[in-house]
Length: 209
Image (cartoon, rainbow, N blue to C red):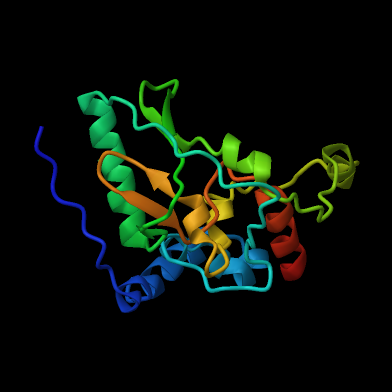
């Protein structure tokens, strides 16, 4: 199986090239109700594929113990190798991951989707065990549902890649390292499966509204 070499050379200028965004906004403008036109940038797929700026609520990873042991690199089938290669290439292009020389590194797993595809996730359970927990309050679901009492019409929006909107604090990325047969990489955004993500995301949302 021959896969193209992975490139880690996407520049920040390439990541922030908004040439396609005006075209996209015109399309979204036509399908989104006027009441939500001031939120059009939230619906931008172009911005979703780009690295967010650093904010006050960046994920500062504090350890309460030693570095977790280095994860195992498992055997992969051809299909799994192709899926892994595509995942790394896509996230390098977005600027979400970069090469790492970390002393630690988590393993990853694949889970089959209902459609037969493969869902990739990093196994951070050993790292999560030694990370100091963020206690920023997250409203309970039953409290949120009371907002809809008496309503007959409401909008449901799926916020894709929500945790990827949050950055890892500069200097902490090595703790998120991912080990694969291709390379060792670390995240610049919060990956799914890392503890404290819900609390930090709630902090981000509260800052907007």
